[in-house]
Image (cartoon, rainbow, N blue to C red; front, top):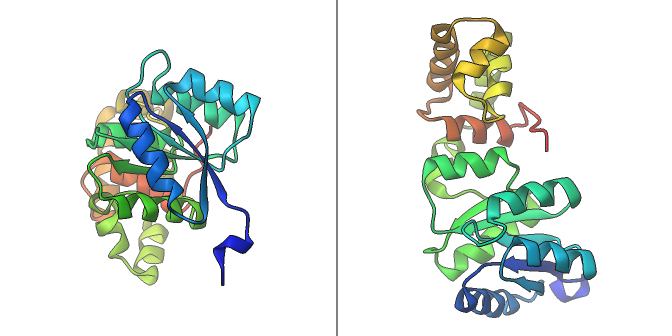
Length: 220
């Protein structure tokens, strides 16, 4: 099967470093199935270009940019261009940042220190499966087989599902306890029970599990 028979996937790049933009455009341009249609230096320029020219299939988005950073840009893309998928490419690979972009609706996340092959893999995964997250986040989740996952999901109580829904909005645990009309210790119990069932130990992985298995719908 020849990829050239189908139209190339259009890519927009937003990064405030000129060398990074050029390198990315050159790298992605080498992949037959992809075509870079927009190159922008920040979120404002990106949105302007999309409004003027083409709504891209994927936006490769840096987080640290002047005027309109990646977080603001992601929020706007989710509101205005719902079908566009967003791959975050950033030096920030810490859990809080990943947690934030996942809850905001990013489709994938790649470190700027990644090998060029990983960027291609990420683009492919985002197009085919709708998401790509690094191995360090998903390896424990991927280790479970389908029957294990079904068993785990079946064991989640209604109250835990409610907690999970609120946890995926980025709401603080204090706000969740107020929303659920229960004490803070009870909320901690729901969280710890889910951590134990899913064999995880942080909120980012909890959200990734919920999104991966479509247990919650994140409102965009």
